[in-house]
Amino acid sequence: MPANLSPKYLEAERRYRQASTNQDKIKCLQEMLSTIPKHKGTEKLQAQIKTKIAKLKQESLKKHATRREGEFLTIKREGAGQVVLVGLPNVGKSEIVSSITHASPEVADYPCTTRKPTPGMIEYENVQIQLIDMPPLTDDYIEPWIPQTIRNADAIVMVIDLNEDSVPQMKSLLKMLEGFKMKPQIAGGHIEADEELEFFEERILHKKSVIVGSKSDLELADVSLGLLKEHYGKNFPVSPVSTRKVKTLELLKRKIFEVLEIIRVYTKPPGKKSDLSAPYILPVGSTVEQAAEHVHKDFLEKLKFARLWRVDKFQGQRVQRDFVMEDSDVIELHI
Image (cartoon, rainbow, N blue to C red; front, side, top):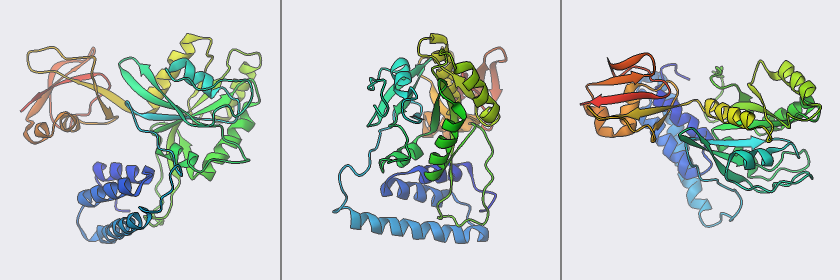
């Protein structure tokens, strides 16, 4: 793949690989085609994209009349990001969700209580994040919609029961995710691209992930947690949680916010105070220019410069379009 693809192209490609409907895939492909650099080195890739668009449009026409209801379950995205909880039976996922959201998944002592995805909203400071309690993953049978729902999410919380042997649980969970063509990765981790792989061949989808050790207040938890960190702590953040301890739940909210790799940006009109209750949510690494575009397309075209406020560092400093923003920055846009 050419090395000079733009960030907009790469973001559209990421959304394409996670899209669950032909309509969404076509939209992403069209965006990729419009942003791809036009030169000899991308001619093959441009042709592949055009072919795929045509094929998807044809498939959509054929399937429109025959598509079965209920074949896939789609959870409407809400908030600053969508995060799924995955784990083996009876690891405590539903109890965690009911403790940090307003959702009410069924909680019981027997395995496989959760049979349908149960979404709820986390309130972390002034940001809301969608958290989905998924049915447990087992070797016996997986509902056909489960892999796609996990693929569609922005991040994964892998829940491990610390009252049981943690390492075999983690091995089983990773193996099943691998069967879904997914590989969990630490937030911010670098992915080596496979240069030889054709663009439309199915690739392993790397997912930002965090490990949660549930039932951390029980007798065997410390030993199980130690083994979990020893084997997997170098690759993933490991967060012990007890639904009886509020502090651990608040730390979990922070971990979920961090794994999404997003920042909050606030705007203010010249001479006035900023509204700190309603941030714009942007990917980590976003620039002033990208923030301006998020606010309104006119700002992107007419922006001359911005002034930036950052806690304990900048107080109205003038910055240019390519200045990289951080979480909780306040900007004043000048056109």
